[in-house]
Image (cartoon, rainbow over all chains, first blue to last red; front, side, top):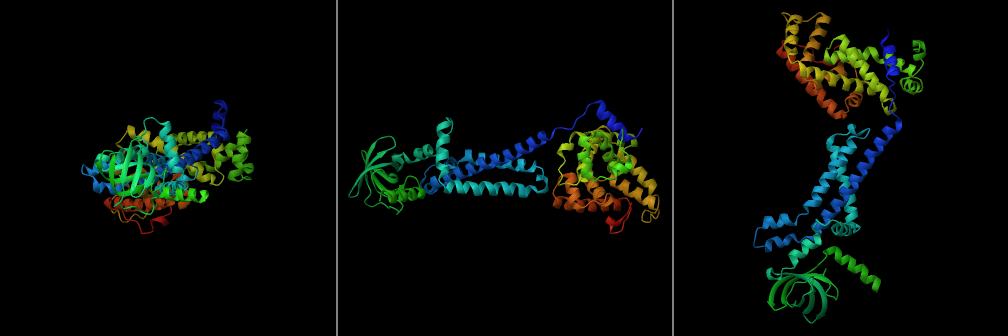
Length: 243
Length: 202
């Protein structure tokens, strides 16, 4: 008997049917959805990494008296860096398992995923979405320590020379400040360095480097905006609207 | 009832796929169209006996039938079929190889017999072919596969890329390495081939 006939008979006898087209179509759709979703999450993670870097005062390391390495590692947004790496791996594998993915070398697959995550993440960061996303995440995930919380831990230690809070009033060279624990402070900023990004106005959140010089009294050597340079742009926009 | 050869010949590969999905009898046309080259290919990369080769091909065609709806019409049907047959062959070969590891000794003895004496002057074409096959047997399977696909099956880099699901650049690199490995093994066995190994017709 011809071998071709044998095969047709076997297929008929065992009632073997071709897998329906929708199964393969669904598989492809799932692969592309996984790719898009992982690129989206990877981009979000990258934007938050950028946000974390922007919010972190790495220059403070030089002021630190105890382990600088430990302090530096504590500042890195490991959770988001790991998330970014994991989703870059997932998007790379999704791309590889697409119909034509095998045609691209691994270097290009990885490079493409990284480039897309960086590009979209940067756009998201520039658009101001990173901070909001990080905040929303911190509210919903109890175990996650927000960047804001980490930052407050550093900037709410007046004994070490770091103080932060919201300006209540400014008179001559004295700021009435209420810190994030609702404690009132009198801040002398007479000899302090104040960069142009800082607006000393009521309601403005600021960070201070200096020393305690009395009960609830702080002598500032440097004043910084609480939200970083991005904060200044927001303020500018707000001011224009008010005008 | 099977389709007559002259009717099968009227259709292109892709038309036969569509026809097979509508009427299973047309699947026999596909089988018969590719059978000789695929049997030869399996033999070239594994040197199994005829019965095993036919079993592999039958199992591969059952898989082809099951996955017929997954055939990408942008790809050549030949590459797609070779891919499935190749995977089936490799998986069979690996299973078999894990059972018996003493085959190399037999190949070495056979090679010595084939090139008996003056290894550099293999004038008989059949002996030369036989020597090539036996030397190929000494190569790792991924090297042997690319050499067989490129030089014995006469495929382009793109077709090999589609069969093995690897980028064309990787195909080129692997062929280069495989050629070097082949030359080294040939030298070790006292066999020399001309520089244009790719033009060796078998």
